[in-house]
Image 1 (cartoon, rainbow, N blue to C red):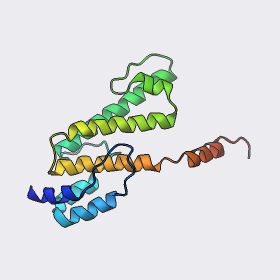
Image 2 (image 1 turned 90 degrees about the vertical axis):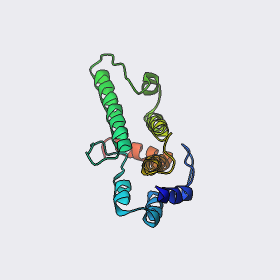
Image 3 (image 1 turned 180 degrees about the vertical axis):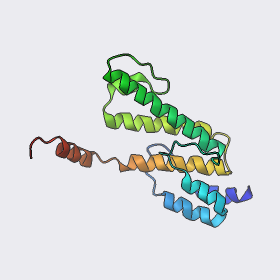
Length: 165
């Protein structure tokens, strides 16, 4: 357990919407200094888009994957209900968020919802592998937020909505 203290003290404090110059590559570099190969493998397999629960997943990873699956199912059910013109009450996502925002705002708020869940998961983890897993998930959220480019988005929208070229 003591090796986790060393890596944890090398990591920046992450805040939602913060613009940091820290990447997963840097996390793995630090991890190689302090952690064993099993822990490094677990960190490298931590992917915010993976919802397949494995028997080898640490508890916190399995919890996050269950949450993510529930969130995605909630969104699928809401979209299906909208398409088929019936009302569906979501369990995780506020309906006002889905009804009153544009797709980019919705995506940002869904990332915030994930972030807040990770905050709760990490409350009792400070210097352990679970802390690093939560950190890695949060880092992926920040990298996703950083990838949003309004100008490029407008350009892509225009390109894909142009008629008859």
